[in-house]
Amino acid sequence: MRPAAVLFDCDGVLVDSEAVANGAVAEDLSERGWPLTTEAAKLAFMGTALPDMVPRIEHQLGRKLPPDWPRQIVARIIARYDSGILDAIPGAEAAVEAVAAAGLPMAVASNSGRDELRNKAGIFPFFRHFGGRLLCFEDVARPKPHPDLYLAAAKLCGADPRDCVVIEDSVTGARAGLAAGCRVLGFAHETLAIDLLEAGVKEVFTTHAALPGLLGIAPAGVAA
Image (tube, rainbow, N blue to C red):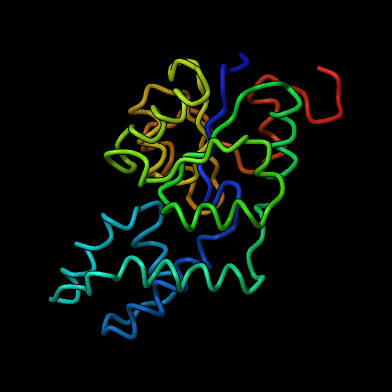
């Protein structure tokens, strides 16, 4: 069944930014006395918004972070993005173009901060298909796993959340989409399929080439 709108997560779904961002986090926290590899940081913080990261980090360090730590870490992450090492997830551009060609409204709902999300959107031209419907945790009262981001994204698209499809790759994000009442398609890219299924996702895919079929639309350039 064709959805009324398609709501995409960003990191790990559209942009291959998990390793880049978590590499910056690992570097920062290692300097502060919590030795972390990029992989360990990804396991600890994947899909987690900055406000929810802070108490975990402070508990581990046994002290408060500087008040401007969120600004510091975002600046460090964006510097890595600007170095040119950021890539799109394979097939993401074609999937977004297929949804656009089908005439379905789309939005991005990300646990990233505003500056970080806008930076990523500026790097990849296919973000133009979202028509500025880019939501971050700063736009809602509560980040994922709460439903606020996906409820707001559905509203931006003029759609009932129950008629929307969410594309998510993290357990945190999947729980947010399900809590919003959306149909959630789990992208098993960084997260194991079993973890997404255990979070309540009913449908899992591993390549963006499968997405048009799951949405009931034809790929870009192909008649439905």
